[in-house]
Image 1 (tube, rainbow, N blue to C red):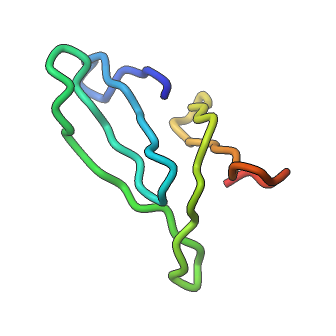
Image 2: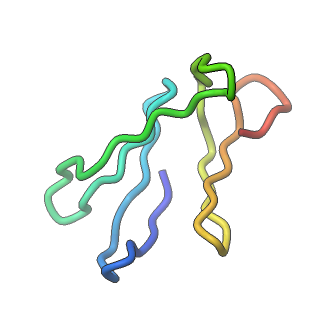
Length: 71
């Protein structure tokens, strides 16, 4: 989980459940505002997303659990 401000300036949480889905959650009520699926160019899901980081331009980096790979 990591926090960020959306384009409107609202504080948000970015949460992974270990699947290929990332959830944008409002921290005031923990309601999911948006869900994003992470897939390879061939359409295959990227699962085991872990250790989320958001860098300057809004790009999300995630470790793929139990590997040395970054998505």
